[in-house]
Length: 475
Image (tube, rainbow, N blue to C red; front, side):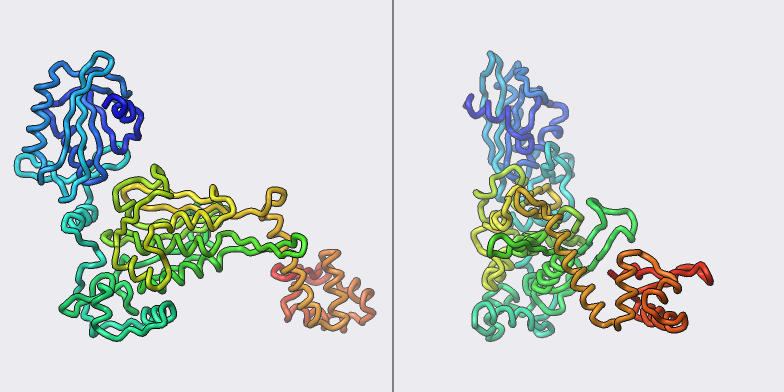
């Protein structure tokens, strides 16, 4: 026990709390933590230890133990599983209260006719918001959000996109009502479940949305002009997956370089990683949170995908080994269907595959709290001697040269002479153009008009001070 206690004294505070003494007059101060641990992943409270983890000790261990036990039995509902052990360290007596993760959630602190549920956020026990209470209720009943029935009739819905993708993935056709029941998409009364609604062509679930933004710079701007591109998508989650991937692809750059006889391609964010992250967001997000949505935010140097709801088991992803995460699914029906569509695996290995999609796995980070799950991808680089930006510059130069060749191929000889002169000298006046081409002033003016109509050059100034330069959008 002493070895275990030493571990608790150095553990993360998410599932460990410390109390200098038993506050008999204000038991809520620690009973709310008991409730929060029961509603989450469980945890331990050490009585006789201060916040600096220094052992202070208790004067009346036996009496305190009896008081703790009685208060939990009378102030927490339903009854929780716990153990209470006295331990002597540094010649001082303390009590270790261990609370197991509850199976009959939600658990409440009961006092004078009031019932309050608490959850753990960081090192604090806070009142559970309504959406978390709802999810705890579903957990306690062994239910999931996607299995709940809606008010939408099966006969009023269509599943063209789902059926098409199912046939492509399996080579089998959806036969009818019995298949939808077996998938968990409709109930026995022919009403859509939320899984069925999310896969229907005209899904009207408000919280089934993705907000996509390409920001100017390395952080969110404060004005609309700071967004280079933004889109909002709602509806069928298969469509949301495709649109999300497309938005990232359209706002990413791709470059290449030659190594020996090989062409090596570089892309900001591997498509496999983006797809896995979006599948994870769509399937494991918390649809209980009304008005919530998934966010895809692209910056100059990184990409963030944020989905509503933390880890389903209450843990923080940054505190666990992703190679050993158990496959616990918040929406098991949707997960099973996406597995059938070959979008994901049942083994819970999606986060690992996101990392493996990058040459350097450190370029991917995961973070979660009670409210959200974050996937952060840093822009990929080239090899250790060449930054991706250098490769991209060459790719941009090749694109510019290709555009230059296209424009020049559409010009007559005199127009080409003027454009080539402008590329080298930035500006040109009538007299210079006349000497360059051998044309009369009137003929030169017609050449200038032609190039202006093609939006290749633009006039600056008036009368004798007028000159011509390349249009800002050209070459």
